[in-house]
Picture 1 (tube, rainbow, N blue to C red):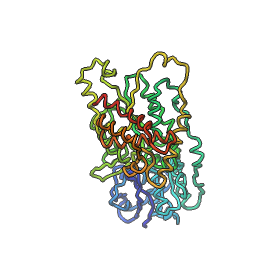
Picture 2: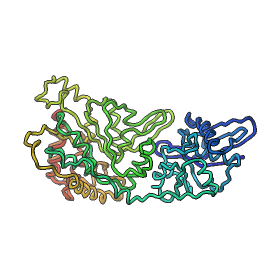
Picture 3: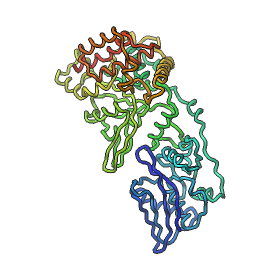
Picture 4: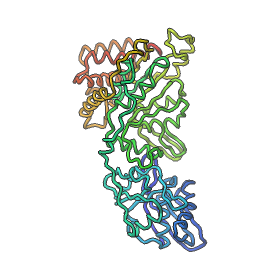
Length: 507
């Protein structure tokens, strides 16, 4: 007998519908899986047959042929176990159900028949809804994740016997539901606070501007001045994720298996801080069948690179395209995958190898030049703000006055982002940092006085055309923070001070 069950295969951050065809034929007892399976899928044969017998079912006799269609899509992982098991029961007439055409099934089977959690359930649930499935059966630990997809019944399954009983109508399973507004209301914003940081007012102001416009920032200063402390507090002043952004972030984390059991949605902006020994595949993503890297896991959040010159130069250079386009395309023999990577880059570094400022350093000019030369000019041009984080004086360290709390800064950032949201409501632009040339020409027009100031600065600092665009973007953000409609000389002057430090060191 032939049985058909619906499942899905994840490629990149999207899922493709897969039809699991199981045929119980004549011949010696043998289970064959075809349809471009990888090693983990081929091993499903042993997991499924053992779980069938341990769950009280009979092992089908004869030649069992399992086809995963379409055959030109590579199938990976143990995600097909449950659908194969149900298909074998239906093909051997141990299960009769008219729901197999309307319900998608995913899950890994343990040898006991228990259904274990798998990766990529959220994109699979989105695909199930897109192709008109009425419901999806998922492991109980994945149920909350799938339930964020509106308009789809999500049935949590604990074991194979429970799945079979539900499909035959002998057991009722209530669909899982998730209260999305409550999830966002319970966001934990009690993280590190800017109020704990004493001094460094200029660096705090630069981080506020970066947060308000989604700009990249480089902090330069000696060790122990608070660069890492400041970076870790940046997520606390960023605006909350929208539902669409949260779904994008959760999708990426789902396919790499970084959601906690029972977690429905990631509602806080990611903060990723890879070690400087990270490879280009670890940063961008890779493997034989590409999976997301750190820049995609930081999508809609923050990527913090501490000790920037210690990263391999070839690794840093790979970020140039993602910084511009907000996505990364990885090509391998198995195919090309595109992952989202619209992140804020926060980098920190010492000005010299020994950590002191150039005039105070004991390093030779050549050593300093080699150290700074690990960061290329094109990469620096893609960083909007360069700010110095100097050593604190004794009076600043011992001062009793606390800094401005993150909540106050977050209100100003949220107000600036709201202005940008109204400005770009009919476009795909999400913040000032993502403006294209057409948007810059429309929203960053300068009067004669600020235009003359910018012309002199361009000539004096020998800035590139890319730096010109980024100056206008940052100036637009400063104007938004000031609730100003036009960019004036004051906004432009503040922006220019964030482009001079790199010229002092590299120029």
